[in-house]
Length: 174
Image (cartoon, rainbow, N blue to C red; front, side, top):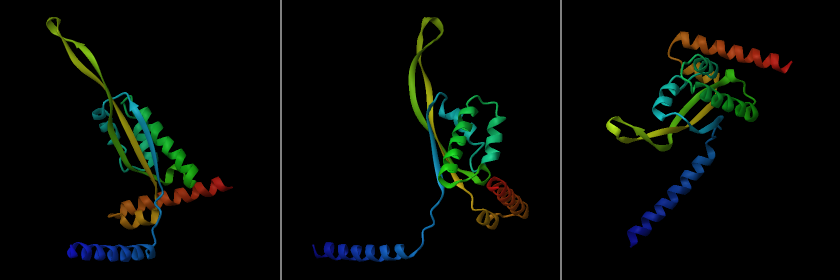
C-alpha cells in the first residue's frame, strides 16, 4: 500500500514539473485547415490512386494534377482542395500559392449490397462502395522550407515561390 502512495506522489510531482516546463516553452500555432467530403461514390482503392498524386504537394501543383487527371472523381477531390483553400483564406488570409497539402486521408464509406447476375441462372452478392476523404492544408513557412531543402535546386524553387507570394500579396493590397 505504501509503494502505491509513494509512486502516486512522484507522479504528481512529475506532472507539476512537466506543466511548469510546458508553460515556459512557447508553442507555435500551426495553421492547418481541414476539409472533409463524405460518401464519394467510388471505392477507397480507386480514390487512393488519385489522392497519391496530390499528397505533400503545393496547392497550385495539386490542382493542376487533378485538372488533367483522367479519373472522373478528380473533380470532387479538386473541389475539396478548393474548399480547404477557401477556409484558409477566411481563417488565415492565405492565398493558394502559400498553401501545401499536408495530409490526405481516405476511409471506407458505406457499402451497399447488390445482386450480381452470374452465369447458369445464379446470382451473387456485389458491393457498391463509397469513401470518405479528408484533406489537411497547411500554410507554408517559406524560410523553414528553404532551410530544410536538401539541394540547391529545391532551395531556389522555394525562394522563387516565396518571391511570387510576396509579389501577389503586394498587388492584392494595392
